[in-house]
Length: 148
Image (cartoon, rainbow, N blue to C red; front, side, top):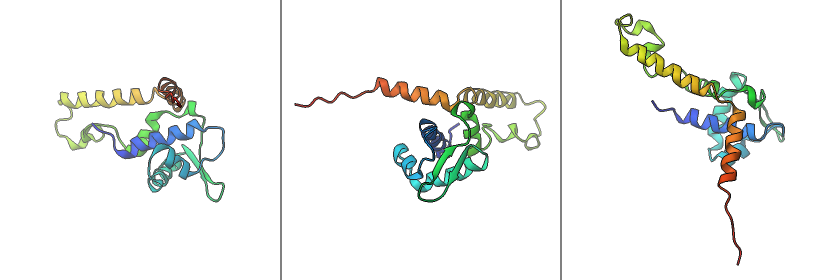
């Protein structure tokens, strides 16, 4: 199962907002530049994130986006499900009527466990966790520049 660009980019957008949490509204242009995502795509994804109450936006000269809740209260699972939809690997997990074998199908039981495992991982991670990991990665990848 692969996640779409919507989810991958959406998580990066949310990370960017979490990195700047407490600094006020962050311009979409800055989010797009820092995360190397087109401005139009950032704007497109922000609409979905705003609709479920994960971000707030304001228009105008000093406008931009801000997290609607502290990073510690936003789970990655919510972000991914908002942008991706169901994380079930097959359709019959979400809709029993699609399969006449639902009551005897052992494979469906496996797909249910796969979905639950994915959600358990994603819901165990908050934006605050991602910020910590991001900062740790930056520390480990410091580049030394020597001038001669």
